[in-house]
Image (cartoon, rainbow, N blue to C red; front, side):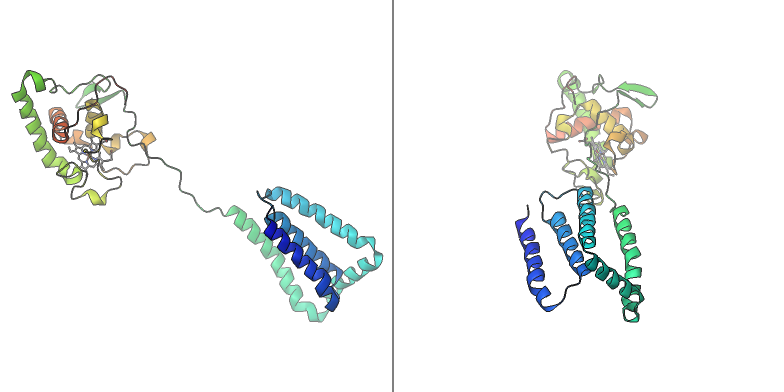
Length: 275
Ligand code: HEC
């Protein structure tokens, strides 16, 4: 119940009933119209939670019938109301008002149809899947790489041959600063000189939610296939991440991955753990 609205409507009705009728001889038709409008306002705005539109329409149909029945109960009243309508339609002094009514009624119908059909366009709800499930395998230069078992082939050198490992990391550094830092930034913070032009922004590798929680094979997939390789579930994407398979060798990609982890100090997520 919205008491404020209901009390206002009741007050308006009382004022009309007691006050106005004292000065003006209120026509029966006008009286009906006022009651009709008052009840419509009460049903539409006076009740919380709001009644469904279909219920309001149903109530108003019943009220219309009830008011007509009330009006027709007294033959004198009925004749008077009929006389009002007839004179409105035939008398010259009402001609302009009649034309206005004749034009307004279809316009109101058209307006209500238009506004019920004309729903504002809504953008589709779209959550962006930042780390979609990778495909089971990808093809790279004619070979198939199984992403759930693939390991960085140079990772083991970290312990077995630190010198060779350092050479791979160095190569990764070269690859990074030749190709990646324009977007991912010279500190890997995702703020390279081109970064401001992109949405989504280039990944910030210092952030614990990027490479720190991903496996190296996942990175291999993302670097090799870039934005074009993202599955449909992560659309709409307008990622600018290039597909590096067209420019880098397999070794260069594994090397730049080593460098990403070396530089940020993160460990890759162990193989076998779900993404
Ligand atoms: C033209 C700009 C651009 C360049 C150049 C670029 N990237 Fe990206 N990269 C992005 C954007 C934008 C994203 C974020 C959207 C996405 O994941 O596709 C991204 C995402 C990534 C991700 C995914 C991180 C995650 O958390 O899923 C990796 C890994 C990555 N880039 C590595 C690289 C490497 C390595 C290079 C260089 C060989 C490189 N990028 C060059 C724009 C770029």
